[in-house]
Length: 300
Image (cartoon, rainbow, N blue to C red; front, top):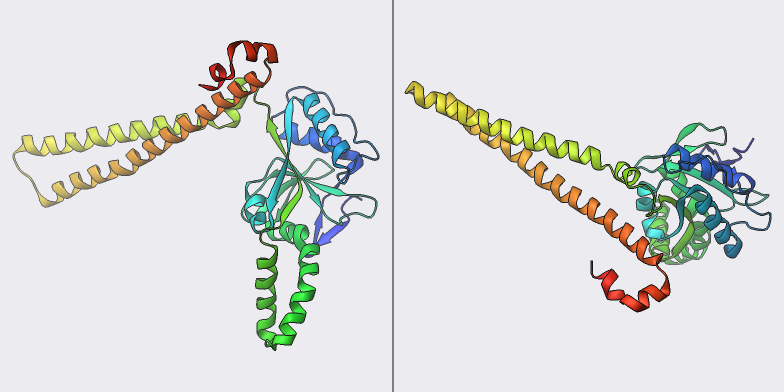
């Protein structure tokens, strides 16, 4: 019933503004952000996404109820494909999607080829990224294409090259245009630290780091055991030396992986600590900050 927007012969599972509180709750639960069972209040009838003030107040209230963050996101036209690759979980408003008001996509996960969205029936569905990108930019491209097509006709561009030239002109004109209509769901910096570590994939990175370290040590031991055995036997063959060299070369990928995972682990943990530190600083009383000085809190 709600799937009424069609683009590139693909039916989009859209959420109306009246059910946006359910979409936010389901996204937070599916991604493991929300630990409580509370439901955000419905969006007021006059609090649609076009009313920035009321919609912003509603997102703050819904985020506080679910103990998460709902962050409005802005991007440029030329960054639409990259934004859709990294998005999720998020609410994505499609322009001109509904006659009775705006409609939203509840995006669970982005991707290079497709986006995983949540339908109003609480089911997952994959939608091609190109279809979502066209839905976001179609109205803008149509407006920009009218004067560009007239320019091409006056220039006498051949029809077989006209469409490519038209697309290039439109993309260049709209490349720096700011775009809106995306709200990202994120864990609150003050949430449970174990939950933050899990969503930052720290256990997975730590396990990979341990496996890379063990692989490095094991291959090093095996290689020197092998060459030592040949030395004690009193003879070396071309095949034995080649095998020993291959064992040593096999250590290099594990060493590179170990160094990369060490850097990634330190960056992610440092990011989490700094976020929690800044969150704690912002919750301090102004009198306490004035008494001890801001440098004491920001020096870390």
